[in-house]
Length: 126
Image (cartoon, rainbow, N blue to C red; front, side):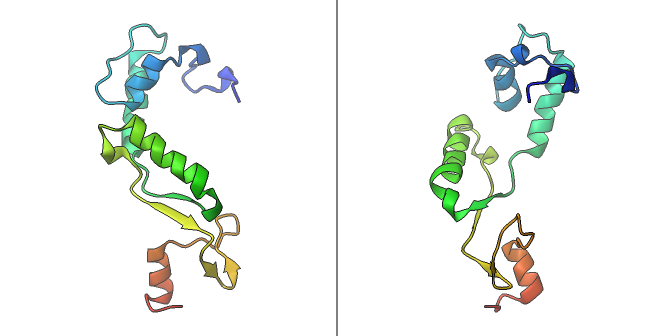
């Protein structure tokens, strides 16, 4: 929401420069020298990103393939061209599958991964 008072490290929006983002998210960029953000905070932010990435699974509806999912692929391939290990490990598109005669949807709470489905119903379920 842009409220800087909510920043846990008191980071100001204007301190989030390209150099800061490159250091946090990209390999081989130096610690920025022209920022008010303490180096310990930047190192922590980089470590947290590296811990949580890559995402294991990107899930979306089939109607979003032409925009959200495609752009997610393009963005990851462009930003981490030299680090494909940071690209999402899997994409799952729902809207093709019915669960208990209803369209599978995260918002309905009836979302299942393929492995969960096999474990619950067997690989032979139809």
